Image (tube, rainbow, N blue to C red; front, top):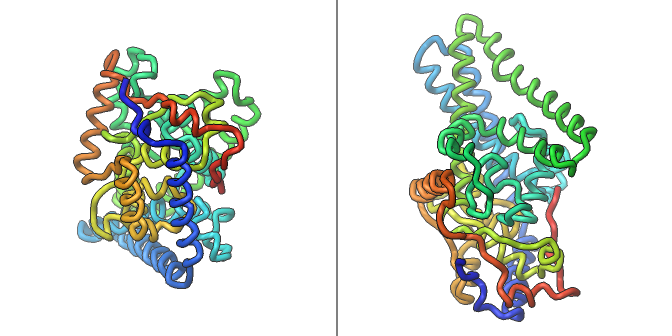
Amino acid sequence: MTPSPIEHLTPDELDAIGRELDAIRDEVIADLGEEDADYIRAVIRTQRALDVGGRAALLVSLFPPAWLVGTAALSIAKILENMEIGHNVMHGQWDWMRDPEIHSSTWEWDNVSSAESWKHSHNYQHHMFANVVGKDRDLGYEIMRIVPEQPWHPVYLAQPFYNLVLAAAFEWGVALHDLELDEVRHGRKPWSAARRDLGRLARKARKQLTKDYVLWPALAGPSAAPALFGSLSANLVRNVWTHAVIFCGHFPDGAETFNYREEQLADETRGAWYVRQLLGSANLDGGRLFHIMTGNLSFQIEHHLFPDLPSNRYQQISPRVREICERYGLPYTSGPLYRQYAQVLIKIARYALPGGGSSEASEPSQVEEESRAPGRNRPRVIAA
């Protein structure tokens, strides 16, 4: 059994960590202003210009340079829309602006997952129960075994291969995941709710398919076939990039998983919740453009600590979070994309086999048990 990475902390120290992180969050919120609003508006303008320019180039994509330029521009536009704009807007990061066009209640992104379904599965289920075995459905997305506590089945032998399919069709994998058909199968979700979610997915998917694969290719006339292939390629690039960034946020070496019982989660203090989010996440090293292209999920640790803070602030506060980790003897996992993603792929291959190595999921220590005393401050749940 791997020792708990927080067994050296006292309950008072966990509470102190919670207060320090709360103070960081409060400082950022108090400092938000026009510079932040200008940032997200500039990103949206850039994304829309790339989208229009890319699609316009694909209208004349019989000419190879136009196809390359159009596909590249559309790929970048889709990445920006999903990662730095859609994901973060739907977290409520920009609700403070009171702009109805950039608000979590109104934004619908360029993705087959509907905003409503995604916000439930991601903002609540994943962020509240990050990396808790049996509670966080994003651990393996219900189709892969990535922790030894998950019972092995022969189907997992193929997971290194169907992970490649998942990467290529990631938006569809996430959309099907959001339906929670496994919950229906186990009787924990009524069929009426599943039919409602399926209808929502069908409507959104029809809209996306029509836009990318019918309407724009039809407008291209003689360039219809290369325009169609350009849209398909742009979606493929976006899906593979998103898959890589997201998987590197929670599955590389150093990112912890947790075996917590229901009652332990119910009594989890705010400080302990913060530390679990920190330990279950991993950052990616890179420059400013790289961070923007990841939606600043290259600061996955900061994002999980403060999912409702504007993403452009994560790089600013990351040194303070790292300093807290160093002072309290907590790991702060970060590394380059190529190394983190290699670790993820190795883990997927290792747990495709029976056993898969020793348990890596942290059992709650005595300190963690004491930190869940009734009456302590509960974590703030951010669910748009």
